[in-house]
Amino acid sequence: MSPAETLSWPGTYGDEAKARMGFFTDTSICIGCKACEVACKEWNAIPDSPKGFSGKSYDNTLDLGADTWRHVAFVEQRVPADAGGGASLVEAAERGGLAEREGLATYQEGDGVRWLMSSDVCKHCTEAACLEVCPTGALFRTEFGTVVVQEDVCNGCGYCVPACPFGVLDQREGDGRVWKCTLCYDRLKDGKEPACAQACPTSSIQFGEVEELRERAERRLEKLRLAGQDEARLYLADPDDGIGGAGAFFLLLDEPEVYGLPPDPVDTRRDLGSIWAAAGAAALALGAGIAAAALGGRS
Amino acid sequence: MSASGAVRSYYGQPVIKEPVWTPEIPVYLFTGGLGGASAGLAELARLRGNEELARRAWVVALAGVAASPALLVSDLGMPSRFLNMLRMFKVTSPMSVGSWILSASGLATSVATANAMTGHLPRAARFACPAAALLGLPLSTYTAALLSNTAIPVWHESRRLLPFVFAGGAAASAGGTALAVTPDRHAKPARRLAVGGAVAQLAALQLMERSLGEIGEPLKLGPAGMLGKLAKGLTAAGAVTAVAGRGGARAASVAGGVLVTAGALAERWAVFRAGFQSAGDPKYVVGPQRERIERGEARGGSRQVGRRRAVQDPPAARAT
Image (cartoon, rainbow over the protein chains, first blue to last red):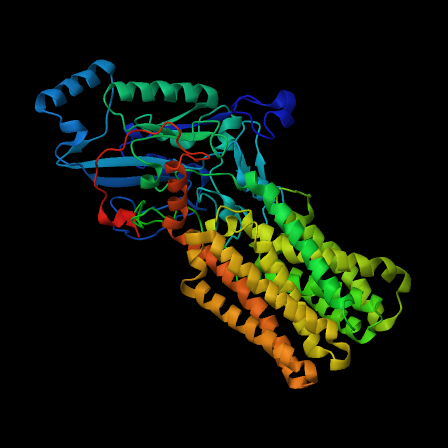
């Protein structure tokens, strides 16, 4: 299997398989404008989801769910005066010059506070637990290697909701079915890019072929490291990780949990063998127990 | 959790979703076990010639497996689409496997019970009785696989022992219910099953809680903790009472049977609630994952770990 291959893509599609498509979300250039949230809601005709005023920075969306398929997180952090290894004015100016030469845009940083903004989305995992546990087959792998819920099949059993290690899926109130990002399956079929990527004014959300995006992400990481941004890291870009790598992966500037993301997510299917083995052993033990109670001793 | 007991988080927001399952589900976890284990008890009692016990246990089995699908359909977001459960058979989905087990078990138990009550279906029953008894075993334990095959830490990490807790509970409730409705002369196997199941459930639970360590904390706190204490109390008191009823004290047998059955229901509910508490607090999700990374045993996430900058998180971003 090539790194980006999934269980059912491209294998089951044969000649009809398309290149695997995904997102590279480069949070270092996210400005928190929420155009992605709005474009997603508009294009996919998602019901409104008012949650009131959260008091959590500029984030009143709070999480992904049935009615939120893009979510922009706002992290505020205090930066000590000597941040960046005791940078002097000269060093800071030198870093600014390097940023200019390398053509790097960076996040805002001043007054001792730094902002981390990140647009979260369904990860379209290579090993997608939601898809594996779905008993109806409503969740399926498309010809683009993405993971989509078929709204005419889903019966709202809710199994995918706690199976997702990222808390992406949820049941829609008053509807009963689960909904999530489709990576704009309808637009992809027409050769268009997803609404969020098209709306993003800074190219923080980049859409393309997963293999190519991974290379692009590596180059961006290298550039940022050269510019002294050595807390930058790629998240879910590694095919060896607990979900086999994601179709939608990220460049983050702090630990994933700071953005509300799990630092070491694992597809539950990896433990399916031991799960079934234990259930089988317990069934046998129950049989032995009933037999001992019913057949042993005097009836 | 980490030594300080705190993990970093996004304003304390949950990382994974709580289940959307309604109270029908813990009741089903109970009725499935009750029905499944009762079928086994009924069939073996019949083979042993204890018709009095067998007939009653078949009725309990039918009640259990008949209530189960009703509870499950009622929990669906779109109940009218319940038949979609049988669109395919997926080993990776314990819910799919369970739907087939429950369907087959329901059919077999119906035939077996009808024959036990009327004697009209002897030929079909020859196949249906052992089938119902055998299908009852996985019906009692697959529900543990269903809960464990999720991202919820307390459920996932209890994957090796939870099926034994459920098996013990199934035995206890089947034995207890049969004990409560069967005359003493014929109830010896039911009493043994009730007491044995109760002891097994308590022992498996003890082992499970110990092996979970801090991930098992939700089992001890809040509503789950209270239900868990209730379950243990009911189960232990029921087992003692059931033993005391051995001498022919009918009231003690009935009370003992009812208590262990209630204990099995409360235990399923406790485990169910604990999953919500485990999903709702990011420390249970992030803590163990961060520890895996720090021990160098990470299974995923960001391999290319960047340097940690000396930033200060706002107080709200720290879950405790």
